[in-house]
Image (tube, rainbow, N blue to C red):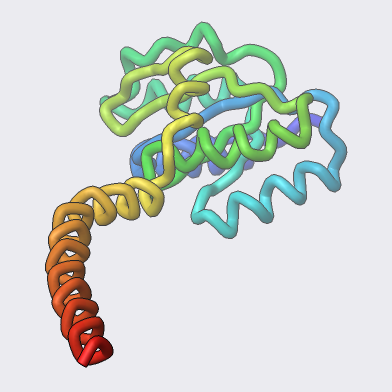
Length: 175
């Protein structure tokens, strides 16, 4: 069933807003996924503050063309049935969420990505972005790198005290 012009205009306006406010967005094919699978994807995305939209590629092209940032974006990769994921908080979250879901649902394949500067990313780049650690993982790695010298110093300082205590206890036992 065809959608009315008003619904198309509303959808284009919504997509334009999503692209404008998103730090990162990714498109993936979803042919072969059931309705229950798509609901699972939407739930996973919602938990991670990612918005999922299914729209015709022609309407996505119109939405990209109506935003000055995305006027020069490459849209040749927009073919077939695509689901789009948007995040206004994290640049790589859409790619990570779709890649995580694709591990258990091989019918979902990453195709194209857009960043907040209006650049288009091909499948290889989007897949590489999906393999990056999350922001929380990067923060944890940074904290461990910063804490490592201090932890080593504390171990050395405690070792001196431990050694001194052991010498004293050995001396008292021998008396």
